[in-house]
Image 1 (cartoon, one colour):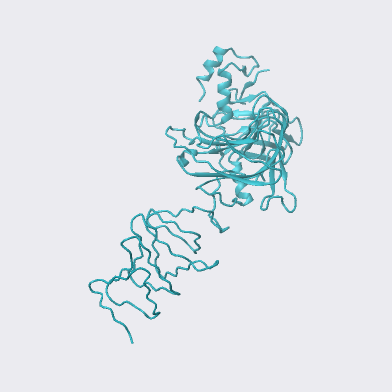
Image 2 (cartoon, one colour):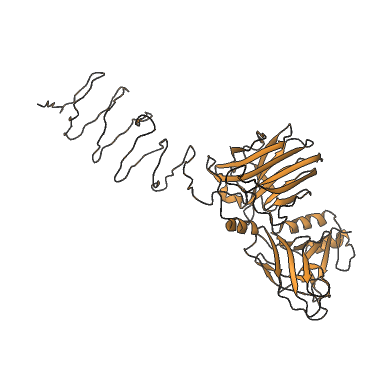
Length: 414
Length: 69
């Protein structure tokens, strides 16, 4: 037997009504399950089939809740064609082979993605894993404003050092091979810091960004450290601080990942043809206290969530570093005639940010005769460029048979 | 000793680069950070030697700065 209700002029079910026959179906034209007074309509069913053109909607400012099954099963939406989630909707954990935003809409995660297969080139920091040290090969540097690892500048201010250190095996922080140790054992007159400058910041103007890093303190100064950040023109002229400039963070004797929002302010001035730069700095809060801290895994990325550290291929990371600094040891192929100055072209492996400075300490090694002084031949027809330079001997002291090798660094840092 | 020193090309023309006191060699490229600092320093009075080793006067330095990019 079946019960047929002719609802052509509407049917009203009192509160707590139930339609319990599992074979019930509605075959009329349009059926609306809803509540005009804000009460709740609950559908308890193992499977709910929604045919073509079915709309589940919540009135303006109302909430539409679809509960998943008990435990960790969650709710499975088995959609054969397209699932459209309109407006600004919030979803919990979403797992899908692909998620595509229609038209110019966006998909934005408000909690961390769980997949390790995240899109590449997220990290704006170069050498964030501290693995590349072209200048020092792991030796400590003790002078202020030098680079203990590529792209990271340290300023101990006083007696101290910066140094690339290899992780133990297994590593203290999973996924990392190195960290940067930064020490001050005798205070100077200025604040100490570790910093990196990120090129071409104007294309990140107004972006929501997140900064994350791992840090540990073996000797922790009482005042702690703070994060400083700001935007600058190409020429170093200060434009403005990031909104969270001066944020403090905790350092303990165990490795801890710290993350914080670090947005780029809207850049309303022209920063220059290079696009200006963004400075991120971990600064000791005291100008006088000593410390010994270690850090790695620096990442600055678009979005409001710190995603897992992006481990790029070593060769990719090295090439990124070499845009700013390149250390080489090459035979420059020069054949000198007797007692003249001379040199040879050295082509850079990647286009450098600017015509590079030949770093102090660059030398020639020769098979015979005096080594001579390394100069940069930068005259008409020999101009230095971001793609190659001509190191040459500034004194006439090579013999005709001399084989010449150049050993040194080219520097085009911000 | 002067912080910066000009030097000549093999053909005797003035090299478009400058040595620092620690013997780094800086090209005259406005995008080069060391070059920008060089111009700031010598304009502020840091000594600059000509290729003959003579420290240039500030007036000579100021004239020279107008000839470079």
